[in-house]
Image (cartoon, rainbow, N blue to C red; front, side, top):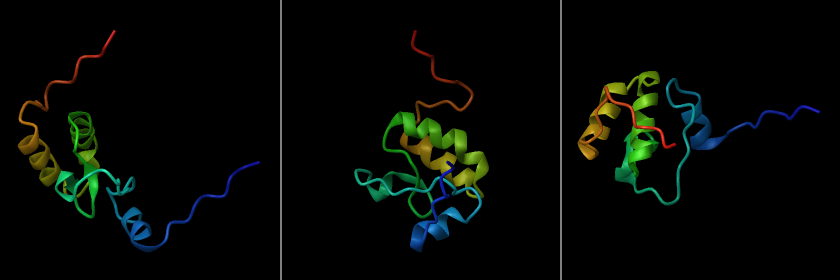
Length: 87
């Protein structure tokens, strides 16, 4: 039995319909200043989420702005270096 796709309405539906913002979700514990993208997209409240925002920024029309905000908040992240995997 296949599930019917969920239809999004309101603000979330509008956000999801734009290119580069398909995974838009408002997190309860993330402050407004801790988002790198428009309309509360690309949360960067942790370094792990900052790295994820960098990885996904190429899909967004605001990619340069997202990268800039991440590097401003986490200057230790080097775009050329990937984090080491734990063994």
